[in-house]
Each structure stands twice: as C-alpha cells, then as structure tokens.
Image (tube, rainbow, N blue to C red; front, side, top):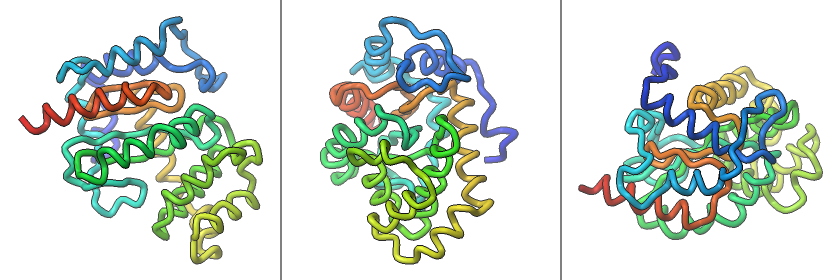
Length: 243
C-alpha cells in the first residue's frame, strides 16, 4: 500500500495506539520517546488479550498483516487464520525473553498445524547498534537465514557482546549465511535501510513506543507477556476467523 494510505490512523487505530502506548514496559522505552506508563501495565496488556473473541480487537489493524508467502521475515502459512505481528529490537532484553521462552512454544503449538503465522517487523529504538542489527537480520533474510540469525542474536549473552560490524558478521556466520560478502553488501544497502525504516514508521504509526509490541489479528499486546496471554489471544482469534 502507498505510504499516503498505509499509515493513516482512524479512530479504531488511534484507540489501539493509545493502548500500546499506555502499557509499554519502562525497561524497554527509549529515553527520547518516553510516555507516561501506568503502574498496572502488564495487567492492562493481559486484559487486552481477553479470551472474548472481540475484546480489544481493532479490525482496522488487520491490514498490517502482509501475508506475503515469499516474506523471509515471516514463518507460517500465508493464509493462516491468525497472524501475530511482532515489532522488536535485537538490543531489547524483553524481546530476547520472548524469543527464547515464548515464541518457540507458539511456533510448536500453532505454526506447524497451520493456525498461526508470525511476521517480524524490525523496530530498532536503541540507537546505532540496534539499527545495524536490524539491517543485518534483513540481510540474513535475503539468503533465507533470518530466523537462524534471529535465534543467534537473541541467544544468552549476544546482546551484551553488542552488534558492531564484526559481531553481526559473526552472527551471520553462526546463522549459516552462505555468502558473507553479499551479506555485507546487503547490510549496508539502501534497500535494507528502506525496509527497516518502513517497519519503524508502521510501528510508530500504531502508537508503539517500546519493544516488544504485538498485533494478533488486530488485537494489540504490549510487552513480553506470559505465554497464556498469547495463547488466549490466538485461540480467540482463531475461533473468530473460522466462524
């Protein structure tokens, strides 16, 4: 969709934006974009993922699912009834917690049997190294190794080693990226910068100011919530989609 229409925020989208902004985790907020955070943030996000089929759902937000079968930054069937969109930063500790503890269980439970598709959006908010890691992940994806890079970048200790040029190349090697020379060119390409910027713009348009932030068939969830929050949202969205 053209930029002029893709990121227009109607009343429903604005309401979702308010929810995403209100329940952001303070530990993942960039200082320059720090909104007020309510004390009951985790509970509020969980409430937004009620088991009621339409509780907290904003149908306008479902258009953000790309459903591109060739998208290397996605896993699961393009026609899956439920799409989880994740906006995340590789330097975010809570994103790493979700990637290591929750996401694998969602993939095992829902992706393999066709209910769920997960679409990644690069949302670097912690400066130059975040930007480089995002472009590196995109570059790995051009050779079909995004999810392997994702796993390596979120492994215990990876964030602490940083995402300098040598480190992202080492992560690409660990991820099995075959052509490291091409990886380096893609990493520094205008195409990588445009792709990351488009994801960032979408996230900010939705009101996301911290990571991780999620949409589950138009249902906003903010923060690394417990597994049960995501399973409740996915189960409810799946029931509604199959009606």
